[in-house]
Length: 112
Image 1: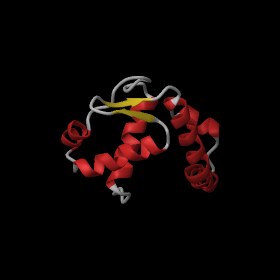
Image 2 (image 1 turned 90 degrees about the horizontal axis):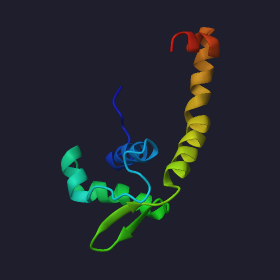
Image 3 (image 1 turned 90 degrees about the vertical axis):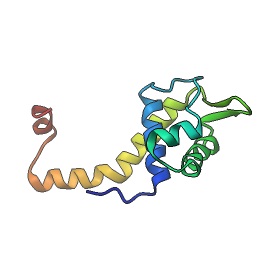
């Protein structure tokens, strides 16, 4: 299934996952816009848009002439936001499908 979301949202999700997983730890510098764009094969303006959203959300800080750094508490804030979004947007459809197929939580755990 093709992902139809805008590229900057997909990049933002990728960066958020890296912060949550600790690949970019609190206080650590993120890759430069150009470096991340080159690594992802994306337009630097698109990467800048993703980074700007993190800055607007207070998850990164910019040190002029040096780079962008992950703020303290960013991983926890992102994890909470991701959980809330999952429960609000994804879980209802998953739960409905499980009920339709007669699957229980135990069934899922048996296949983990």
